[in-house]
Image 1 (cartoon, rainbow, N blue to C red):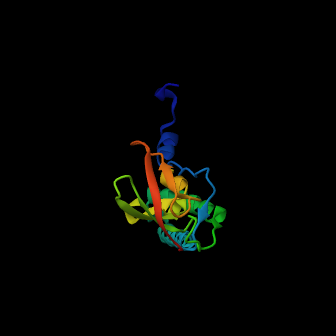
Image 2: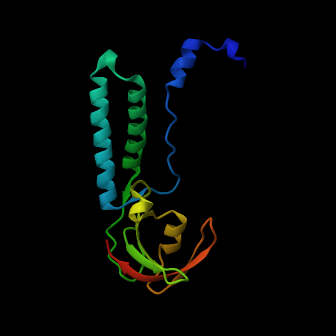
Image 3: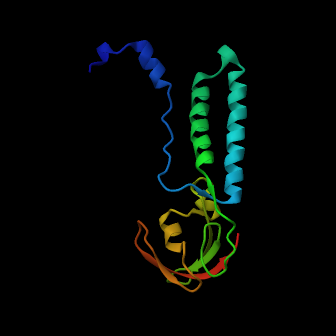
Length: 164
């Protein structure tokens, strides 16, 4: 269809609609602290939305649309959350476990397996459904597992498992 036949008022209104956030297909397992973070995020977004809505005609329409999109996403994530019991095993990796592993060069790394929304690789919080998370989940102390990475597969050894 040619742009000549597009109603400019409708086109402008559509341009303001933010792209919806994609919801993962994996189960939404969360740690108790991950659930608290989701609840805090929803509360924060509701507060910001209320403040923006209270401005009436002076409200930033794009900001309001973005907040509504984020509220839909995080409310959905909160309602689909499946809280896992706190990891208690020091023998088997579970969601919530803190795991220390060594690579083939004996370089050690310590991570904690968490839910998707709580993941922050720079802080050592790894999504249980990521390639590293899947390699570690269910492994036992002393196991060697294959971490299938885009940069090449790597054999890692589980040297310590700590409960959450």
